[in-house]
Image (cartoon, rainbow, N blue to C red; front, side, top):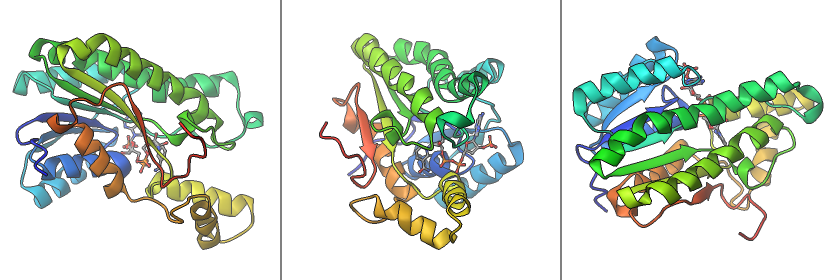
Length: 263
Ligand SMILES: NC(=O)c1ccc[n+]([C@@H]2O[C@H](COP(=O)([O-])OP(=O)(O)OC[C@H]3O[C@@H](n4cnc5c(N)ncnc54)[C@H](OP(=O)(O)O)[C@@H]3O)[C@@H](O)[C@H]2O)c1
């Protein structure tokens, strides 16, 4: 299927590795101009160079801490100076620390909400006006399976991400009339550095090996395996494309069937 992404301008945050980088690679393969953001400028530039060497399309590294509104404003100004449009926004950030209710104070919740909720809201506020002006936009917010099914050792994720889904639904309701769609994606276990660190933590806590902890994660999933960043990116690329034009206000799980509920 031709996703009709050639020449579309995409902003992908938290994209120097893991899920964000996989999304940038997939969009770039499909012909989009990709702006990628994260904090470490060296690692980010290396990621941009690597993606460009594979796809031959433009990838621009813009260092940005998504918890810093000034950084977001600078990125927006730099992009709009160059392209006058942003067609696709993929909001993403690092994950909050793992742990149970007993492990955290209110400051930890505030930091997690700033990292995973306020950053998405600020990014969307930054790029919504140009999408509205151009009467076109695809907003995809990365969340987690925790928005459907809280995980006991990820209480900060459980709390901080549901607001993103509520905000996405509000954007979908209020901006659909401008031909802007807004959806959330909710990954289960996808093999990135973040997941590897969660597997290592489980191995330590249960005094077992990394391999046994990995097998235990996989055993929670009907498909009996962890997902790949490429599988995640394929979903996002479709949602980022004109082909997904009638999908709006949805939260789409990509979890190998791990979610146990019906709806
Ligand atoms: N992998 C999974 O199975 C899974 C499942 C559900 C949800 N998630 C969530 O999806 C998100 C991405 O996960 P991942 O697995 O791709 O993690 P990852 O491989 O550790 O990558 C994290 C990326 O986020 C960037 N980042 C971290 N904090 C940032 C900030 N404040 N501003 C801008 N960029 C920032 C990092 O670069 P810098 O450190 O240089 O900024 C890096 O590029 C996380 O929130 C994670 O909790 C992941």
